Length: 268
Ligand SMILES: NC(=O)C1=CN([C@@H]2O[C@H](COP(=O)(O)OP(=O)(O)OC[C@H]3O[C@@H](n4cnc5c(N)ncnc54)[C@H](OP(=O)(O)O)[C@@H]3O)[C@@H](O)[C@H]2O)C=CC1
Ligand SMILES: O=C([O-])CC(=O)C(=O)O
Image 1 (cartoon, helix red, strand yellow):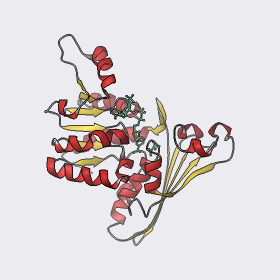
Image 2 (cartoon, rainbow, N blue to C red; image 1 turned 60 degrees about the vertical axis):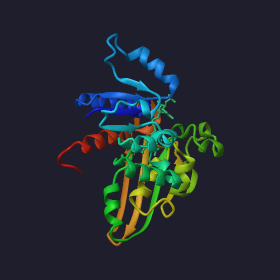
Image 3 (cartoon, rainbow, N blue to C red; image 1 turned 45 degrees about the horizontal axis):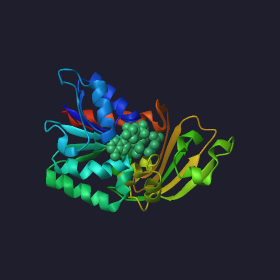
Image 4 (cartoon, protein in one colour; image 1 turned 30 degrees about the vertical axis):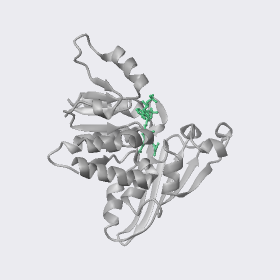
């Protein structure tokens, strides 16, 4: 496979390394213009046979098998529709961006127009397969609870409500509402709420609660669901990714798995 990556942050670097080990080196990077020159200077060989570093979808090499977004909501907004319309399959971990109904609609149309597909990595949570199956019957309620150490909420609206540094022993809820509200207000922290919503009963019926917990030593995600299938309780205690305490390692692993599954003759 020839893979194009958007962004080169903590998740992207993990994905790049694992794909290389699996024999699928990243052959193109879509980056902000100011990053392109830095990367070309650092990585391009004299013979010019290194990866392509570009800042527009039009400049991506035509022979890519898949483009992978590990750069967040803004990047999916900026490049997603053009990538799909150009006929590239796209994998994203920025699921919360789909809480914007206009973007979801645009991506759907672009994929149809380009004969391409947008695949959603499961990210830092699990049990989405069970939720997807359960909604075929009737899902009555789905509740998501996200709990991270205070450091994991830096740069989010939690900082407007709480003095994160002063939290020492008592957990504090800084968001309670719908998954749509969480995903839109916390673009770097509540993609998991979006994943639960997309797999289950949608952004407006899925309840979400976000908690800064000084007693937590990991990123903890819970799902509580009920339906005609029965009852589901899921809890994961995920280690953060080196390089970004906000993002769980499993999120990066799920991106690699989604890419490898897309090329596998026997698939989940
Ligand atoms: N589904 C899930 O469970 C999870 C999803 N996520 C999502 O993944 C995103 C990335 O996470 P992570 O790697 O940890 O974050 P980082 O902050 O480490 O990296 C983000 C990268 O994206 C790049 N970037 C941002 N906007 C653009 C743009 N418009 N064009 C090109 N590059 C861009 C940044 O580049 P620059 O340095 O130039 O700013 C940076 O390289 C998060 O923002 C979040 O939305 C994260 C964790 C879990
Ligand atoms: O990585 C995590 O634990 C969850 C996260 O940031 C997100 O949902 O955006």
